Image 1 (cartoon, rainbow, N blue to C red):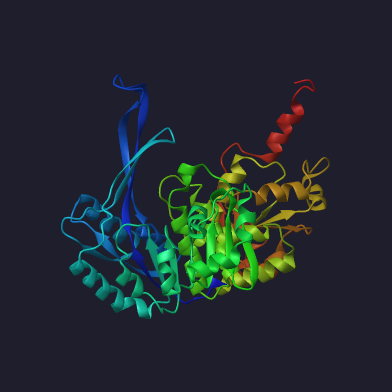
Image 2: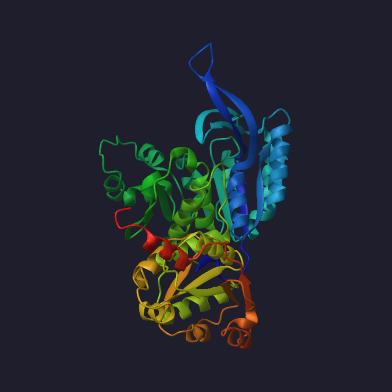
Length: 476
């Protein structure tokens, strides 16, 4: 699906670029002039914003990207160019004399956003700048696999610039106002709920936003002129409208509003890239939602990598798998060029040593598989009274760890049958021994894999923990 094939997607992003700055500091007193916090600046983080953030996300997701936009001959413009170069975005930013680079500064103290102030010019481009922008767009857009237009009202999209994008094979429009794009007949537009309400010219007197949109799906498509419309509903997910089909919904995990900065750009990037890679619109919508869910858990203006997204999509299917289904899934990952890491154990009482070891194992490849001894297997290995937790509970806890992709049960004393089915590129164990001491090593190497031993944290042992628990007085 989508970008799981080997083809590198060529994307062109056209639109309103900006620099996002996050100013972090402490605020321990109020100003005398007014009841506002006085913040001592400690650090500043700069990141591409707007269309530049969409381009950065596309690169992180595996696309080859050219960004076309407008910036000023000023310090924020140079900061933006430098940040984009470091991220691998091929920039084609037109410098317009006298025009300021859009710059959004956010003041943050102890994780709380307390203020934002913006520098921006939203006037339409001068004629000379418009002609040069049209020339640059015409030179690259027709040959792109996908063109993403990011129209946030910054003045880049004059009528002529919009018309220059009409008729492209795949045009995805993320716009604050979608009505002006109707004549371009885009493949997809991504308005938010408030914009759709304005587009419909109706009062939204209904508390059920989903019901309001679903009842007007055909009308939304008609007014936008697009093949499909994705309406974003913030913490409620999105609604995908397509002609002749019922709206398709994706679901979001609610996050604080200040953590959602740039999440719409990430959604647009993943959605557009998955469409360009051959995914269905529904699959693209799920990819966009999963990518947005990744960045809302990160501070500042963040990007979602290809690895992040594929891992998030895997979790939607479920981490706990049967051996047979797991073998099928891992074949798909290998076709996508991903490296499988395999480990096994009882994991009876999960402790810090386990978590650290699994985090290290996850960093060694793209997909981490954890095989868990069955209850009968633990009893044979550890003796009477074990396991403390059932296999179902142990697998459920492991599946909740961020770095673990799949969990599978095995009943034999060693995981050799699973290793034959899974054929991991890397077999990892934790402990104070060498690969040659592991009975699985000859098989892994015969199958072309590598064996590595990672250190446990000292003084971390399930047996020791259970021993301490059992030595406590009953009324402790």
